[in-house]
Image (cartoon, rainbow, N blue to C red; front, side, top):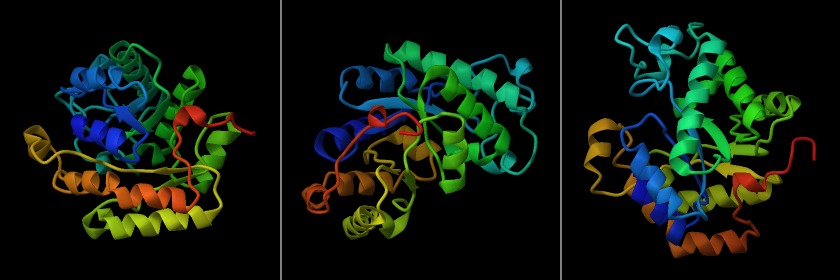
Length: 246
């Protein structure tokens, strides 16, 4: 997956990525990022994969009995189990680890499985963004306005339509880009998950492994690059986001 992201950046339209600091491959991913400084890198905050970076005893509301994170977002979303202060403890630990691995401050924050739709986690990711100055992903207009009311930088809109099945083929992406151009938002984050075909670890651990090479082929297709110019779109990064209120 890491090499797929780099390929999508070098040959395609991907400008930013986020690092899972608690993942086994985090050091390798960070090494690639350090050698591709034009790729904007943030932190993919994780509560539903592997184990925490902080002491499980300090974050009991987030972990299972064995000290690992639950594997499904359904264990968190809508369950009212998460202590917001405990989430911030773990989020800080992941941010610090990402900073150490990258050798620079991460530019932005998002969450694995979109779990910051949970109110306690929206607060925690927002608090980490406030402390660090990082931008933060928003999942919709209401969340965008809540984050901006806290003085946080976030894109105007978020598009998650580029995923699953035929939605990740070139004709679908061209339609998405056309809608973005017509939508009038100053900035739109297009979520994507490019990867390579021979990533054995990804095939073994991710339910979304087989779509990733299709995404990579689409994101690097010259037709897509041409459409960016034709629709008057400009590729940008999270570091380009203006402060909230401007």
